[in-house]
Length: 402
Picture 1 (cartoon, rainbow, N blue to C red):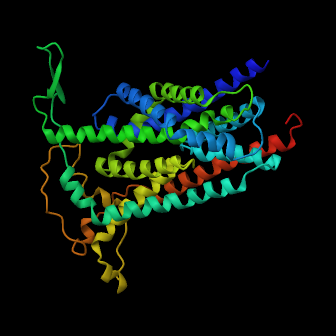
Picture 2: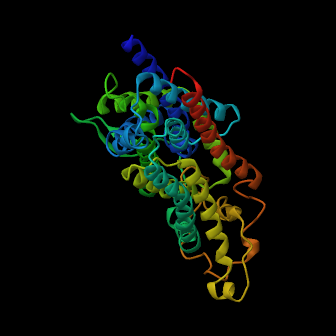
Picture 3: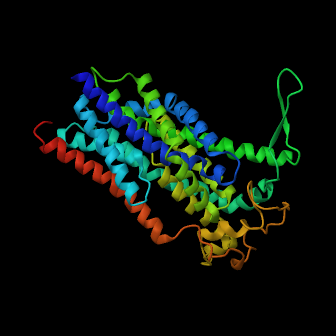
């Protein structure tokens, strides 16, 4: 009977990991797939490998936090199945309304509901997690804001890359071992830029694995007897994420790649680096983090920083406030593309200094996000974990079997 219940728990964990893989792969490799730098199959393979690597290394601390430290209640197989069910159910609800949920916040919410119902919630651990949830989006906003204000125009000029016709690489098969070389039309700049795009996608996959593998398997690891050991559990979670990457993620990669048409690829990559670094750092501390919320605030911060270049600090002190629009990032998108864009020749040094740019040069018509839509996403991202928390609390508090 115990083995049968464990099998059910594993199936539910696979379902959770499957959904995580579907959404996370689109976020990690959507820009690269949309730019034509990698195929969907290659993106899924890279997602599987690097998500598993993130879970196997840094992700162990997050598994330990969710499985052993957040509540003092001893997980049983039955409790684990219910917790995983609410995580999966909440993710399903978010998919129905078309808003990706924070799997980390949902997992914490479901486990916290258990702790509240049993009176075993570790308030110190919970307070630390919630504190980082509040701090990390603010940190992402300000780091991205500094990049947008002081470095973004220079980065656009330095990393503007046109995608040429033909294969990126060619292979010399005349020898015993095939040797790669640049394609017929490939420039070294294009190759380095393309490698950077793919590398950042791998970094995002690693970050997603470090934070999210735990959401699928932590309750099963927390079972004292009859559960899963850390190693097999991480392999299970990583495999489930890979399954989602090779199947349902094909549509999400299309969606993310197309939805980012108003967001220059360079801006998307900067957001990815900032967000992934924060999520990876928090995972190393054992703190589950919401990549989507952090990334959203990074986009806002990057656009805000770019828009404030119209005003110097001394002007601001005198009360001359800039007209801030996240659409500022679109200013260079059409004439200075990155990998995947049309032909363009970068012209270093042409951007104007801070305080000398005209507000008309930073169009408001091409806003990167609609405020109402952004508010709906953020509200939904917070409601879904609340649903998981309340539902778990109600079951573990009032259902006699628990």
